[in-house]
Length: 348
Ligand code: UD2
Image 1 (cartoon, helix red, strand yellow):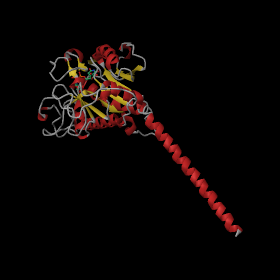
Image 2 (tube, rainbow, N blue to C red):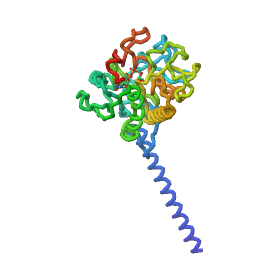
Image 3 (tube, rainbow, N blue to C red):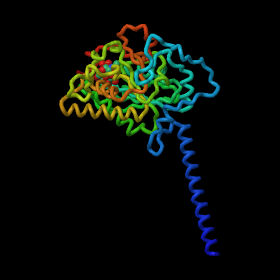
């Protein structure tokens, strides 16, 4: 009888210990998840990314009052503001900047911007950087990475508090095609080696451009593409996609959604890393077979985005071209390519 009692006591003790261990294990998991959900600035959690908490979960700022949205009357009826795969297309008038900024301030996000200035293109840096500071994610933490073969020529533009300029040396090149094409490789390395667990979003931008108006939280998304200003009214068969079937950037005449810019794209870090890796690999595999796509990395990016649909599409307000007459649906120009003479600035 006594032995039976001892056994029972032993069993009860054992069960109690198992219960205590179980509860504390769940408690610690719950807390770790809660911390992760409320602080998306720390994307690295056991080396993984919680995409849901960082991009899809939008928490409104308490007490913020704003105009009631309508479900029957769109603020823009002259343009399409959603793709057939239900990604928003961002136009002036389709979003509330105050609401969005409040949501993303709560998340304490940080954004990287990359820009390349090789050879004579350093001349565009001052204008680009000064206008970036005035219009690009004002009030947010921004890290601007300038890749150049002439670090000493980078103008010392004073950035607002919370924003930093980082200059990274890259080799010179005799071919503009190579400069353009190597951007994907450099972006891939930057993400893998430096910013993967430090920054939430990244935008990769052309330097021969300047900002004129707000480019902010409305542009955030998983994979973000900008519609090219030159072709947005054309039939897809006229888009300047790579048309040789031998290239990995090939898109058939009856395929393709929009023609996207190589001069501006971005999104969440893991999404842009996947894009950069894929485009770089396809570009290099093509090169081994002696093929260079019609518009280098822009062609590979367009092929990639035909298969991997962007989760947010930015209208041509986000990359206009100064030589083009403004069209009626373009209510504001946020970022535009400056007029330039290729013969004066390209190395070949
Ligand atoms: C188009 C694309 C651009 C790129 C290019 C194809 C848009 C609006 N423009 O622009 O993104 O796909 O075609 O090559 O999407 N660069 C230098 N030094 C050079 C040459 C280029 O730093 O000598 C860099 C620089 O950051 C520049 C970018 O490469 O902004 C693209 O230069 P581009 O002048 O070849 O591009 P562009 O305006 O013809």
